[in-house]
Image 1 (cartoon, rainbow over the protein chains, first blue to last red):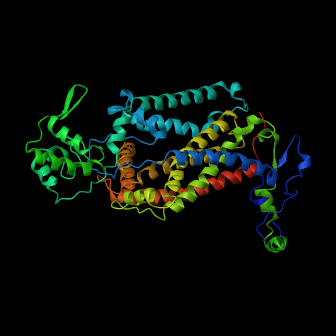
Image 2: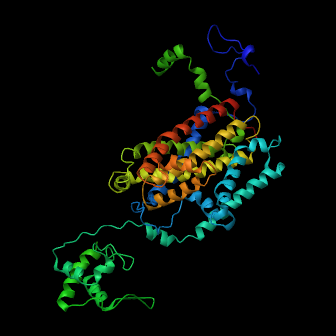
Image 3: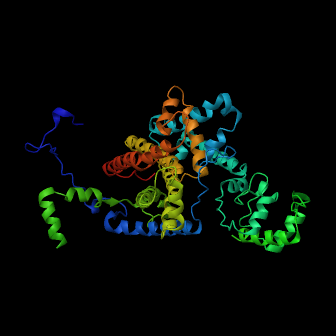
Amino acid sequence: MHRGKGMKFVGDSRIRSYEKNRIPKDYSEYPGKTEAFWPNFLLKEWIIGAIFLVGYLILTVAHPSPLERQADPTDTGYIPLPDWYFLQMYQLLKYEFASGPYNIVGAIIIPGLAIGALLLMPFLDTSKERRPFKRPLPTAFMLLTLFAMIYLTWESVVNHDWDAAKAQGEIVEEAEFDTSDPGYEIYMGQSCVTCHGENFEGTPAGVPLTGTGHTPEEVADIAVNGIVKDGQQVMPADAFEGSEEELQQLAEFLSTVTQQ
Amino acid sequence: MLNKIYDWVDERLDITPIWRDIADHEVPEHVNPAHHFSAFIYCFGGLTFFVTVIQILSGMFLTMYYTPDIENAWRSVYYLQNEVAFGEIVRGMHHWGASLVIVMMFLHTLRVFFTGSYKKPRELNWMVGVLIFIVMLGLGFTGYLLPWDMKALFATKVGIEIAASVPFIGEWIKILLAGDATILGAQTLTRFFAIHVFFLPAALLGLLAAHFIMIRRQGISGPL
């Protein structure tokens, strides 16, 4: 190893003078079926890259990337979920030995040990042996870690309420409606508005009315008879109080919202 | 014509050795899937780089529309996704690429681990690789907030709380990331944007350069 004094430079430059020519050996001097990187091997690599890209693009087109509604810091009921590769850590922090007073175990110590061991792997496993079966301890530790990561991710996925997660993040479109319609006045005057909101956006007590797809006849029926689902009255009957004509106006007005 | 230009530059800068270092070298038989199909495991690193390049390109196009501001961030993403020609594809590639890069990098790490390629003399390159892994996770974490939708905000809240639980310096890390001791808002978004678009990519490019220079210096590890 040349360090400092032993170095010779070319002329007055800072380019080192080498005893041997540093241009790589000729291909014919290598044993085995070697191949030139440029252009032979690179062209074959393109094929693998192209196949990969096709799969990638199919994934992109088949599954548009998700976008939930705009962030609302006041909505404290929202159950958060990280991206999938952090799910293992998210799950780890749910266990008793890694949460609450022991939060530091799950948040810092376990991930820190894992990353630290990975970073210092060459100095922990110093044997010359390269085959995985000839160095059982590193191999066993890695397999154990892999198993733990897969198990934690799996546990986190099966214990998550995906339907609720989808519903809580959904983008609610603002309804367009005609406030001069007599039906709107009836809607505001009746009990409908207290549960379904001034803009038909829904409240904790009533679902949004936009996009339900109900026809005027169905709306009129629901306003009078309510909704019974699985034997339970999810919307009370006789919510509407008024004349038959008003019911008709309300139903026709609301159907312009429900069809949106 | 091209040869003449090459010769003109080469005469002045002596680029032939550089070219030889980059492209003109041997690929040994044991890493060539054309000879041994099982050698496809040696493609994972290259595919990680491929996805990284796509991430950089698609990210450059995303910033043409994205606005890092709490009023407009979500709207700009919504507009990009629903109105801009091919916006859905560009955002989709960036979104799925973020996952693919983690997958390919993980597989690459496992390949290097199980072939024992991190051993002498490649210790430094392995450590640089682990740092690249950490930077990529950081890119994933900061990028998750940028669309400013519900999951972004609340996942980041949890993430920052975890960072705050680091002993002694946790509170500082939290303020450094969020821009405020209590609020996760406009400052957080601009900081995450800056970290995602400038700081971490700069670190990533430096580490990748070191990674590749070391590979060229040391060559690929021999067959098992």
